[in-house]
Amino acid sequence: MAICKKHGEYEAKTIGSGDFVISLNCPMCNKEIEAEQAKERESQKLEAEKARVVMWQEYAHIPKRYRNVFEFNKRPNQNIKQWDKNSNIINIGGVGGGKTTYLCYLANTAILEGKTVRYTLT
Image 1: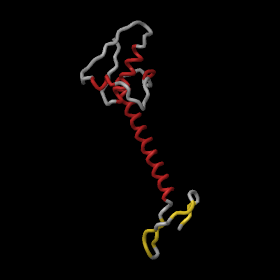
Image 2: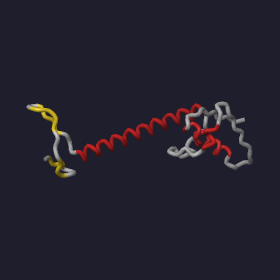
Image 3: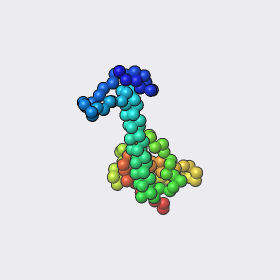
């Protein structure tokens, strides 16, 4: 039996023999370490995805003030999956109706889905 300062007694396991013996850590501590490492890997994946999105937003010429017009962890728009490779969208309406915001929202969501987007003004 061994004693973990955090979790108390546990059945100790060792590897090796003679002068070379390694004691394995507390199983509960090992699970906590593995969970923390998994959380860190997930965080790194999210940061890499954000960097990819920012790169494609710059390539698409989406104005900087509209680059955060979406929730990063959600993929809400089913219509984006239906777009063809060469689809275009034209949005017409009065001043202050939210046309730019909506189109940038769609463009950002399309970038999250791995689609190529180009923002232009006419």
